[in-house]
Length: 115
Length: 109
Image (tube, rainbow over all chains, first blue to last red):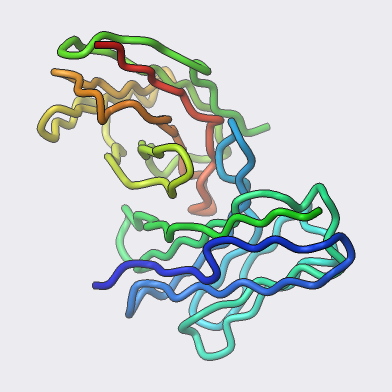
């Protein structure tokens, strides 16, 4: 396994611009998760996919956020009309979706700075 | 509501032992995870407990008491590279992880 990868690693944008992040999970992992993390806090759940189906989306997630996993492999997270409060580390994790343990393995994250 | 509590920060000495506690309240329970996170990096998986008792993995051990809603992570023979944040996360009945804010562990020589 090559591990979970995310691109880009860093993104600086101006307020009001749209940004898109990509996540490539561990191959054959059925579940893919998106989290947001700010300094001194644990990861905040955003959404998750079982294969290509988006099964859950946080109620805290505004309509400016959308995620896709069109072929059940890689996923994209788009933020429209970015705000300064969107500045955070965006983490992607994947898991096999089988067994009780279902451990999530994280990618390196994309650090977003909104100016 | 669902909640995870763990200390914000702890300090320990190189070569010593430290115990990081975590209490949890979740809707249903499907296990307790510990992750390590170095500054600016992603969390890495350390341990998983679903049954009561102690799980040992080298210098790291994790304990769970389901009746008390309590877990701890024990780190022995501390090394400087163990300086990191340690995240406790409980899996609820929907198999979603509920995360604590993390405990920043500072190791002094």
